[in-house]
Image 1 (tube, rainbow, N blue to C red):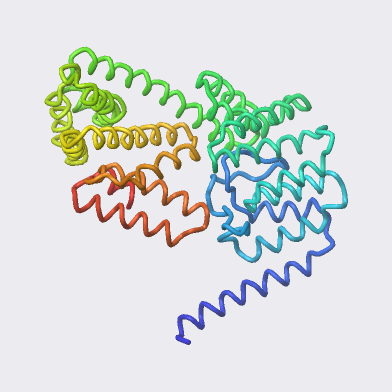
Image 2: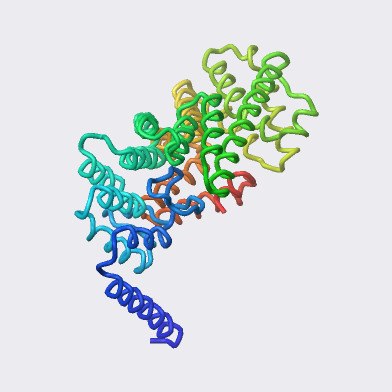
Length: 399
């Protein structure tokens, strides 16, 4: 064994010994003390707030679970602290809710919901309702199922029925409306969460979420203006491209190219002329030095110039890419992954340049499932393709 490995092993062993000493010397303390110790150590794996007055920390993905259901990347001290809380779960209903909260902080969503049901079978406790709300919102972050977002909202509102000033519930209401919409209600809810927050850090997070939604609402209005510009003149002004190339790129990908492909399929090329679409792509390349828009046009032209079947295939694949991007931006991750799977598994030749972008997002799915080697492989493949072809945005995302 090398010296560095011996040193690393010694440090690891020392950490385990220290954690074990803490475990035995603190055994028998009150559940509240043990829970407080755990919450000082544990990460915050989801955006939702949990009951128990947990200290503020930014949300992180550090304690997602591996495929076998065990937490990943958690120090021994955190696991031992969790064990202490769970050993005391039979002391009271509050202790059982604390144990359920521990399961959620460890990334075990199903276990947290099961323990919450056991602690509060009649759905009478505000803290258990907050815990259920957080668990459903956490599950929504993982699978993008709007049913979970709606359940998260429902449980948060039930908690507010019990205690209208419960700041964790107000936070979760804002988060649920952020996922479900409309933005107006989400902004109002975040404002209420900011007012209810007793901690300056939680207040700032609520205000930042409201501000981000306001910016997104403004952005949607600008996107609508750009769409109107394209539909009116089949072009974008030099000022639009210079001032907001990201918005022009979004409209190009989600409005211009799909409408052009379907005009090719219908044989009505005068409605969306290929030259006009190519001109927009060339303008974007000149502004951003990213060749992907032009390569996308070339791939589609070759596919549609071969035979009708290949044109239909490339049209479907591109539509999967667009719908995947839209679903991802709306936090509907499960839906986005399904679309990106179709793009990456395509059999068309040549491949859509957008397959690299889709592969990056599938790599994120692998990462959250604990398949780290697969995630690195996807990112490396996408990065290699993007750098070789000059796809600046995709390369930046992959890196």
